[in-house]
Image 1 (cartoon, rainbow, N blue to C red):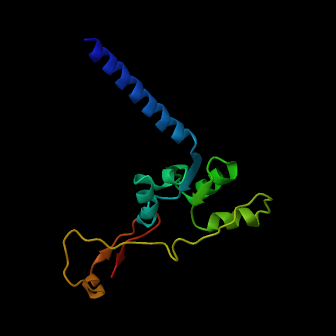
Image 2: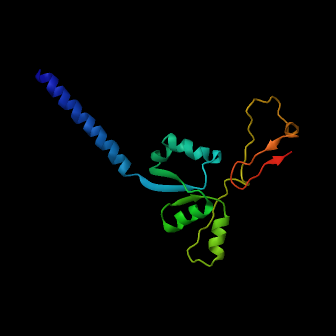
Image 3: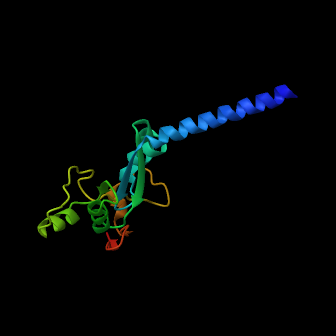
Length: 149
């Protein structure tokens, strides 16, 4: 009976030690908050890297938040609520043109144009743009409109 109790105590101490070491590792991570203007397939590499723990491997505790709109992303970065903002350059240009001393600098372009995807409910073999003649295209976000091709 003593061996079972000693074994349980040793197992408990081992588990507690592993737990404390794992938590200590996470405490050494550099916290980085990222605000994105929209959840987008274009950010898929970021989502995959986060899900697979690549950021943690590099010493980063990355929190990804949604700040709907470039104005909200810009405000979050300027206020210090987030360290990185993903949005178009229009909001940063507005801030700069207002003469603000503390303005953002865009340093990378992830996409050349606003991305869109064409989806169908049924599989279409050998798709061609000609398949769209006489069809309606519905924009995927507020401000887009339905177009009859």
